[in-house]
Length: 220
Image (tube, rainbow, N blue to C red; front, side, top):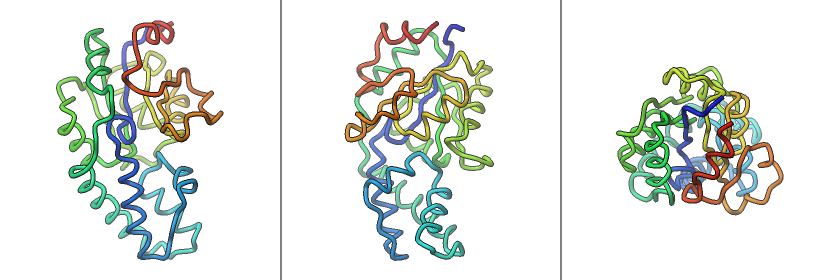
């Protein structure tokens, strides 16, 4: 089926926010005696904040009575850090103009809360390109469950098999593929050689590198 729709993740794909999520989590977790290595942190990239907190609180045997408070502190901290420090990723203007010129519908689907969507849309100036945005924050399940992607496609009246997704995380890639969508992954350079990305339809080093040949190869 010809591609009619493109859906983008946000964190680590459109803005360089993953290090800021890591910093915010480290600062809050320190209050509970939790310290995550980068390798441990990367295993939960792409999860919703409440699932991220619940997973590591369980792992370190921290009372779940504190989980909601820790989640709120992390989100508040990261929103401030993103507004003050986050860089827009290379190729954002290019990729949105590329699909807009083809009259492809464009949406965002993220595990992050709606407040982050609003902030990033403002920072990047992509609002005029968007047909829909969806957050998994209030869903029963977040990524790697496909619901947030399915909801985004439905909001644009798009068939999931006519959608292409752009992701940077393993959990996001699994969500996109579970939704029966094509998936382009742009992993962090430190993880780019990992074999698990083979599940994607295409792997690139930057949004800037996506072009007509890639689109034609996926559009069948």
